[in-house]
Image 1 (cartoon, one colour):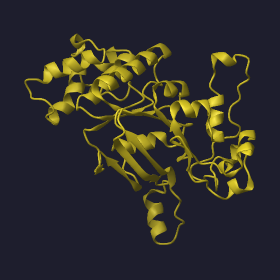
Image 2 (tube, helix red, strand yellow):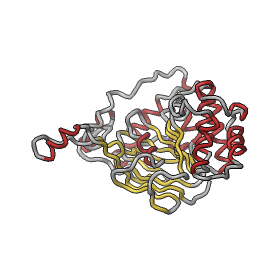
Image 3 (cartoon, one colour):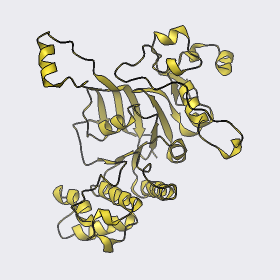
Amino acid sequence: MTDAPILEVRDLTKVFDAGMGLIGRALARLGLAKRRAGVRAVDGVSFTMRRGEVLGVVGESGCGKSTLGRMVAGLTQPTTGEIVHDGRPDRGAGLDRQMIFQDPFSSLNPRKRLGELIAEAPRVHRVVGPDELTAYVEALMERCGVDPAFRERFAHQFSGGQRQRVGIARALAVKPDLIVCDEAVSALDVSIQAQIVNLFMDLRDELDLTYLFISHDLGVVRYVSDRVIVMYLGRVVESGPAEALFDAPNHPYTRALIEGVPRLDRRRMTYAPIEGDIPSPLDPPPGCHFHPRCPFAMDRCRVEAPALRDLGGDRRSACHLNDKPTQLLKEA
């Protein structure tokens, strides 16, 4: 890993239409209907990634992490904000950023053979010459743990783990330098998850890859990540080096997530979910979005959104508790 940034995400926001329909939008333009507010799936997110780094993104379902990943991969255009890759402003999807999806059962075309699935992009984009394509595909399959002899078979003839290996080979086929892994192991059995995670790490070392690793599994994220971003209702609430963040979480939401992870050294501990339901992204709470579920919420939290402030040691947190004296923060 080097200190040179490969990716800079600046104040990225994605607002989705609330779904009024064609007639509803026409009436709204005429002033005959009230326009619905859109859903802010990602709300002002900024971060940088160093070349060769694994940046984990965690949070409950609906926090916006998959939308963030799709914008980084160039599959979804941001409403506002900017993505800079290798010093160049983003112009949409490119070969240098690829995505590995959660479900290997639906992300592969069932009508194409494995060899075709992997060969299509490098053939269209002329990554290698026609005479080299077959050998190139077979080498990718072997590198990802798929027997090249199976290149004429269809995806439905393989297990979920083997299909995900094919998905990885397909992503690598255009020689990207950054890969977005969107819950790439969550649909697999635990024993297969370990194999795929180890494959990701081996490929990073061999090919100097950079990963944006999105997952709800904090154990996996802690194992693979150099740094971690914690999201809640579209906002980053905490970020920092993985070891420091997991050992001493600052934000109450991060603490609650980590305390809910079973550990062998806490066998007799009673685990409890975070109290309350996740608010609707159509109508998020004012101030700090987490305040309705936070045991330390103050009046200020209900009206003022906390800024993501520097805590030192490459750590940042968005919590008004950080404005308290140190002793009070420890007691909280």
